Amino acid sequence: MSNQQEKLGFSKKSSGVVLKDVTKIFQQPDTGKDFVAVDHINLNIHDGEMVTLLGPSGCGKTTTLRMISGFEYPTSGNVFIGERDVAKVPPNKRGISMVFQSYALFPHLNIWENIAYGLKVAKCSQEEVIRRTDAVVEMMQLTGFERRFPNQLSGGQQQRVALARAVVIEPSVLLFDEPLSNLDAKLRESMRDELRALQKRLGITSLYVTHDQSEAMAISDRVVIMKDGVICQEGSPAEIYEQPNSRFVANFIGKANFIDGTFRGLDGQAALVEVGGKTISIPAPGRMAGVQKDGPCCLAVRPESILLSAQEGQLPGRVSRATYYGAKVEYEVMLGDQPIIVEVYNPQLTERFAEGDEVHMTLIDRCVRVLA
Ligand code: ATP
Image 1 (cartoon, protein in one colour):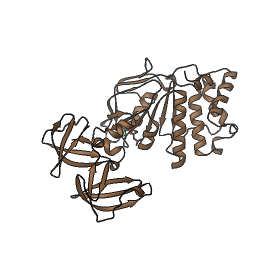
Image 2: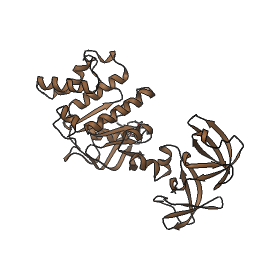
Image 3: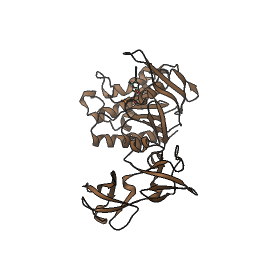
Image 4: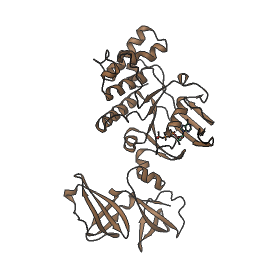
């Protein structure tokens, strides 16, 4: 149990969550046809871990979250919270709390009553309700707001109340469904940091759903990327960004260039890839699934992993656009007829180029992945 948990008088330990071969099929109301929203997924969220489901709209994130919460039952497969198979257990018996985009506060109850509500439903003693509610009010910096009603608070404050209400009942798992989507960009960033700090302090196992990739990167121990109802890749934010296993993931998280080439074989661990008549050695090419010797492949490279020089480099190009952003200059460089995006940070310290300049690009080889 963490210090903060002890301070709040938390008695329960949080639990891991396991999804085993979980599928959800919906019958489409318009056509009557079956639609596979979640397709045989396996996921293991460790005790105290913060995992984010990330993916484009319709990929099955919310359906997965709803199967853990109990608002949806899987068509097949098992959902475990701790040791318990909860696939058929209703939401209020699962020991979970949910935080929604819409806050879902009771408008007729004041802030203190909103936070205390779950403890009263759980039939805690009056003394315990007061002690725990007061502790969470203080922890969430809501002191002074207790007697206000939800419509007398800002969006950020309301979301803090929603979070307070979720944690006060000592859930073994916290589920977040796009909780920050209603907030403006600046507040979203500070709430994100606050939420992450709270989750770490309390050590509650958490699953977070978003389609905002920077939010996912900033908040998670592990990011799970979904597409069309399946998990395409999971890993720490750094693994996902630095070692994407497909063009989809490379493109979905951050920006990526895909430079077409031909795979010429291995030199020890390094992959030899021919691009524009030159052979480039890539020391850590990744798994290279689906790449055949002498077959087509691509080099996935981030815009900040390409160096530009007027004098020399691996690949010649011509600048077709230069956009100054202060912290960086973003260039579009034509490699033949393929536009390559290059980002150069600290522009004061580096050579500058203008539209029409002939340049040479050098790929920072250890940052390049070889994909099919
Ligand atoms: P978003 O980011 O837009 O919220 P998502 O990844 O959370 O998307 P889901 O809400 O899980 O996606 O939906 C996955 C697919 O399942 C979608 O194509 C959706 O239309 C479909 N779907 C979800 N709920 C139902 C339902 N009750 N009946 C029929 N189809 C559904």
